[in-house]
Image (cartoon, rainbow, N blue to C red; front, side, top):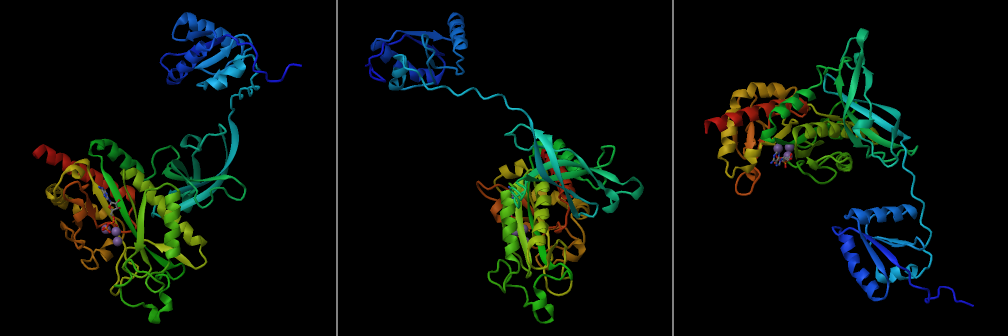
Length: 472
Ligand code: ADP
Ligand code: MN
Ligand code: MN
Ligand code: MN
């Protein structure tokens, strides 16, 4: 009786379908040589040669061969080995042994409906963030990620947000950026969950007056050559959600904690309030993919700062709004009654710091210059537009920019190297060899609208640096 898997089967002749320009085929060439020496008759079909390609296509069609090159094919049995193979692996089937059944080719994938939880986010006329959820069925390819292309516009009642008259109230929220929802990577219904940052449009598709994003977009388009980057230090105060007083202060006699001095970057239950929120915020920002850089407790008890950037002003503005949204959402979830305040001066009386949103900025040329000279020239040129800057830099700055508590005076434009009482500071870390020169505008208040503030800054810095180039 003949043994199973006998090695004594006859050698078959093989076709070697190859492309001389393909790296995998080069690896197979020595195998071919060895097999030839071993007595196999191998016909090489070079698919860059039309005659050979014709034969190769015919035989591939006959045996339904799906692979490209290199391909070893037994013309007698239809056995085949796709790709580079060790000589040992080729031999059994070249001796007539049947290869394993090949899996049937997968049918082409069809678009299928998938359900999503989408939370649309926008800003109202007073700078408050609003959001509402909808569950949408979106038709897409099975492995396709959700993209802007798939997410439709929506509408909201503008009369309830002080953005429209009741008689003509519907406004459009038009998606501009998607963020994965890091609080619910999959919610209880196993549905993918995304945040959809939107801009507000009028029913006719024009930009609503509260929507300043378009202006920033236009200004950036006009000044692409400046390649301006920004980074924001967002300060805020955790406050009691009912009284608006800084969170935790009522536990102290007369609701007043010991004077500031030990709270900045403080550690311990009596040196900071609300770290669980700041920490969770940092984690969620990072998980949702924004350029979150760091955070710390600030000078006043219950005051905090986080930084975002550096990057393109439109990206950073979108990310800043989204980071504020996440922060506010976290305060809904914690077990104590806390909210976020971006007021420029939560405690107007007494010796307490206000909250700002320093904007650090650089143009391509600022980043490339070595010394502080160019940065000083830029600062001196920004003096003229001080009033315009203050108008674009948020509410109630008169209460904060007093010349005290690490601020400049609102009435005067000043700048200086490493001077934290100046309107604009030239950070030490920004000058000298191999440093990425940048400036820190300390004037913006914590509630600033980033689209408005960056529009002023990008257009002013761009025109100043263009003028300087002409005059040099
Ligand atoms: P501060 O000393 O004022 O507290 P921070 O460390 O809090 O400074 O923040 C520094 C900020 O500077 C960050 O927001 C960062 O993104 C930004 N930044 C750093 N380098 C550049 C640059 N080349 N251009 C623009 N912004 C920058
Ligand atoms: Mn800072
Ligand atoms: Mn700060
Ligand atoms: Mn700063």
